[in-house]
Length: 190
Image (cartoon, rainbow, N blue to C red; front, side, top):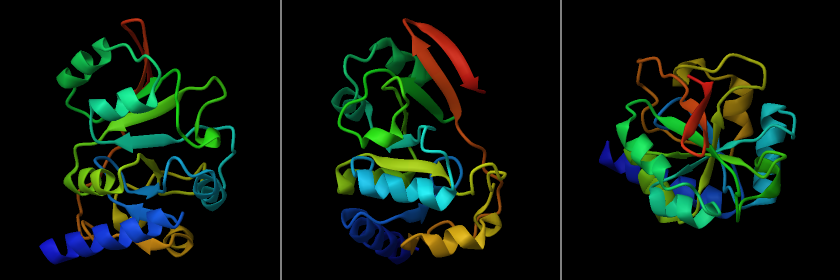
């Protein structure tokens, strides 16, 4: 298992560094990922998913320092809130900086989740940049809850499919999505 983990990290890093797409396990559902700072790579995600380019994408990071690096003036209270949540939670932040423009909302916001899953954390830390994470489905289709339910077109449409955790049979759920407004929580997706 450890060899598969390291091989998957190495292969994923090679693809991300050349602007390609990966299909990988996250702390929620399987995701399509790319370099969140590379506009060409982000455009490939929209094309593969057949997703309208006015819909923002979620980004994964490893810790609070990443939020401080990629969000202008976040409300620090959000970190206290996130420390109390059990379900993975994506927060929509205003003032995104340093990302590919088309992955942000029209208002300059971006959805970011601090990921605690070991594979993702290791991949992001070694890549040293945020990674896009959007569910592995064609836009408008149901989100697959397990690897073996992912559409073949997506499996064939990415540059690398991570082998780590493919055999898991437990159904995964998408993250909660909230918008933090001056200490008030707007729940977008419970």
